[in-house]
Image (tube, rainbow, N blue to C red; front, side):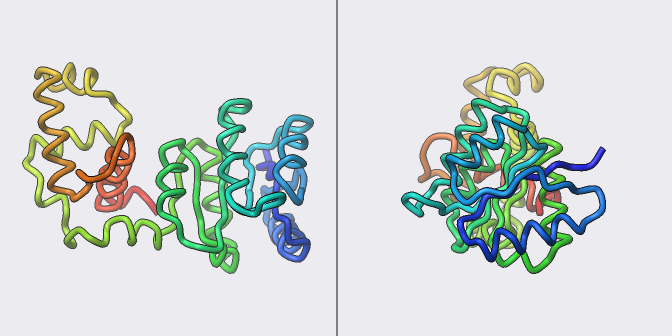
Length: 218
């Protein structure tokens, strides 16, 4: 079965260029091409693709329409892969999309069709893709081997966090109390330098570091 891709980009030149490039790839079919978020959402509702490739900035505000589209599609089409392209590096958006199981690439990757197609297939299969430059910015304050800071038990806990397991599930698997898991996670955040973040961003940044070190993220 070919992978059906819907493209959203307000620049006609870029939109048509991407559409033509992807249409030439074996195993890919263009399901639609749109210039703004509203048209994209209507197109996806009418003819759902396997994956959406969308610019982050589109009419009417040219700010974060691609992010809002990803949020909306997460509710209306939860199994649909979304890969967001951005001209500028924004770690905050990347972390948010990673937490949702989406993809985030810089537009400069359009020059490498193999990377782009690989990312589309990854998110279509339910995986996450984060541009390597974004990962570099996120982990830059840390040393070259941040996981070396962790104890064996903390590495064990972080590996389970990376599997999207909650504190209760981790406690059950390791046969320890939830309080002990909370202490381990707090220590992990501190040692990896993410203790100052808030909410889920701490867990996401810790997981990004773990997956990067383990070679499981591109």
